[in-house]
Image (cartoon, rainbow, N blue to C red):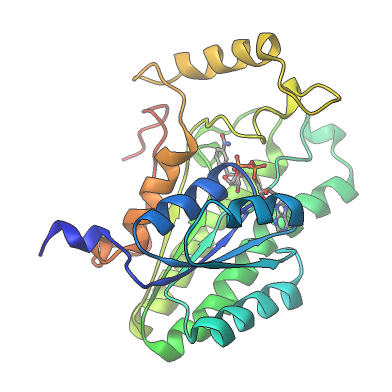
Length: 262
Ligand SMILES: NC(=O)c1ccc[n+]([C@@H]2O[C@H](COP(=O)([O-])OP(=O)(O)OC[C@H]3O[C@@H](n4cnc5c(N)ncnc54)[C@H](O)[C@@H]3O)[C@@H](O)[C@H]2O)c1
């Protein structure tokens, strides 16, 4: 036993949502901890920017809402590196907002496709390869919304609750094969997703608009803090590493103490 167990030297890690926010921070932290990376996102321009921030990596443009696209992602990881040790399903969207009575079918279908089916496809493709290898760690990103039941976020919260239960079912199926499956449920993190409402037409963030939201979310934390993408990446690193070899089927909650379920 040593602190070296928190490193992921030479592990092959696939990260979806790697073009932005938490996914990008995850790629950087895993790279610093020694991983070889497969970066996936549908945003090809920003995926290339992340590629420049890490050491050994390939970028594979991917739409996680399409089963064939995720299958191709894992195939490319295996053909390039010969194996997949870590699958971080980070990609997600925060759409279909507003009261339940206002949500139309197309918006609901979109968020189910990316946040729920997208994670399912990632778990499925990774489990196939990791099951044959008899080892691997899958990490799914849910949200503090699974504990909070926030009004106006029915679609998003449903998908994240689905990710949490999928994690536990996949852990039950993966355990006998030597595959661990865990979930991270972040609290409020400042990323392009949460900055969306404060973005100007030219893409810059209007701080005067953003600050009230940050202050509101900060006050909900017993630490009087909002999170940074690296706070979540560090939790993902732990679950990716052998330091967490006795953890499976669990949800970690880096959320500043906004919710403390037993
Ligand atoms: N930011 C927060 O406060 C927060 C809190 C809890 C959970 N989360 C979750 O963390 C994850 C990352 O969020 P973020 O804040 O970094 O958001 P972000 O918008 O900064 O990044 C999300 C990334 O996912 C990608 N993506 C979206 N749809 C995709 C698709 N169909 N295929 C491939 N890539 C796709 C986007 O292009 C983007 O690069 C999401 O699952 C989100 O729900 C975020």
